[in-house]
Length: 122
Image (tube, rainbow, N blue to C red; front, side):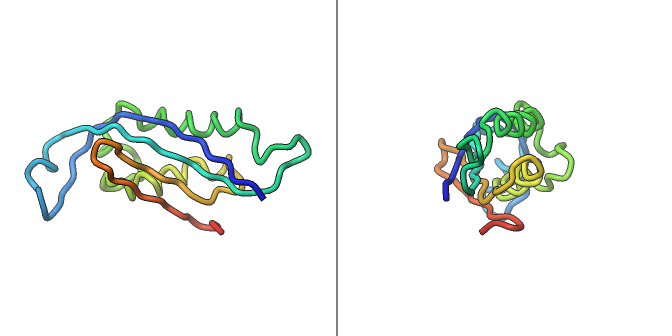
């Protein structure tokens, strides 16, 4: 059994309604995000869990919908939390990524990180 992970980065702005530090979060502000997608499975007949070019295409498609966008306007994201970002990325890449087990999203500048284990994750 193998695990294969690939990361991508994106820059995006959003607002957020929250209880603590509410005023700064309600104003439009941006972050630098990193996302990591992890697949688990055996090697195929070519010796790969998944061809890295196929994985890159799936991640590029998701990245294009997030990078330099206003996250409040991304369809089906909901409030632009890192939790919702991880779940959204899962939904975007899952059809092209058999064996998907985890999507992590973090903001290095603040040390915030979340991991999402979606439907079917082992």
